[in-house]
Length: 312
Length: 281
Image 1 (cartoon, rainbow over the protein chains, first blue to last red):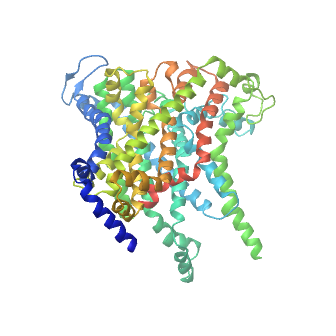
Image 2 (cartoon, rainbow over the protein chains, first blue to last red):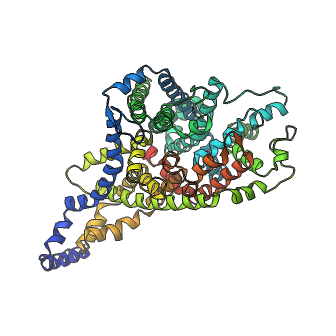
Image 3 (cartoon, rainbow over the protein chains, first blue to last red):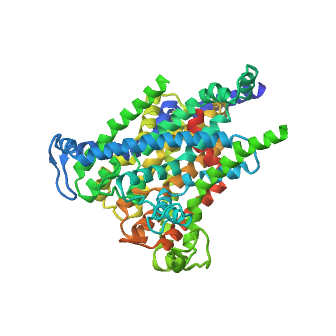
């Protein structure tokens, strides 16, 4: 107490001496100090995030080819997409890819978290190992997957042949259906640990006495899981799921490296289609229109998620 | 009886599923390592067992280092990741500190705006960004990616740091200011040092994300001497239709090792950063 008094007295004594330096006192005001700190990062974000975003919206209303002047075409780009079967294929693929991969990652991640939420030796080592697929640069692990899925000499088909299960393995990336299954599988492999480790962190915050009182009330293992674990985890699962839907929805590198959108444009996601239109075909306006169309589609997916959760 | 029951429960409830998860997570890396250490003769022999190595050889690694710019790519990747992380931490902290600790008009609105920018993905921005970088004459320079990576990192870092900044009691700062410290001094000498774990989490996260980044590097860096590892491996080791799997896997493995090493040293902070949003939110 006396220390505080002393300190405040010291401050009071110091104040008159500081008064001539008006600028210093001005800078001490919370709002002034805040805006001085905020200005540089905000300018940076405006220049490199705000401006490109607005410019992208602007471009989608123009016919613009690389290194050519843009000409205004109104909604023409969107009309062209509306009549473009590959665009609709890409929309369908993006929704299927995001939906199926998210369900697989969430359920697999929940399983991983429940297994990991027991005490055993080398637990933190196991956790570090399980997170590796999520850590390693996506492109590099995807190249490895391309080799695993190679129809002739890849690991999967070699194992099928060596074990005698099949004469010749499937062409993992060669047919539209198999290629979709493959990209969903690789995305699940990479993203599952993110769910697992996040849900595990959520599990560890559930108080033990909740489980104890449920046991006293006669709940079995399933009852405890259904009425204690799952409800307490719901907020964590929801946040991680939303986060993962956004990331998966905008995924680019996986498909770009694994299939390049092929065979015959059958595995294009909206992101890779936007890239192939704008960078491959040089149609910047059309590419921007595809990218912009992703916003309402993602919105619909997120609305569907909340609706699904509410209903439950 | 009871002992046997627990033993069975441990086997089916823990060890078997854990082994399953570990095998699925790790077999691609084993396959990468096995491929990179085999000679081509053994690699493409249909009768050889795929996951065992009879004649280990470093020939693919030697070829990789001799025939390609791999070491240059590693150096570029590290440099870009370090500078992009530095810029992002600085800007992110400048954004997060007032939003987390100061009261001023527009603060709440701004915090929401930052959360929204966090959700703006690269995919929406890359077309105009490519045009912008082209007009700024920054194509094929590392500056292009050093400037654009922070746009992906700053909102996330700010959001993560805000959580840490909020945990420091306001009294600490007030006490320091009563003792005559300026706001700036209170921040740099008292609050920021207390938030070092937050900076570590954010830094590790930003560093690994910059090392993994693909789309902007693909757009802006087409000259071999300025490429980063992901873009170099995909762009130059896959030559036309002929895949050099041994070299590709050697490159993929060597490219993953720095990330995996950094990560293993700081795994605690990484997990803290990963789960911060999910658990606190």
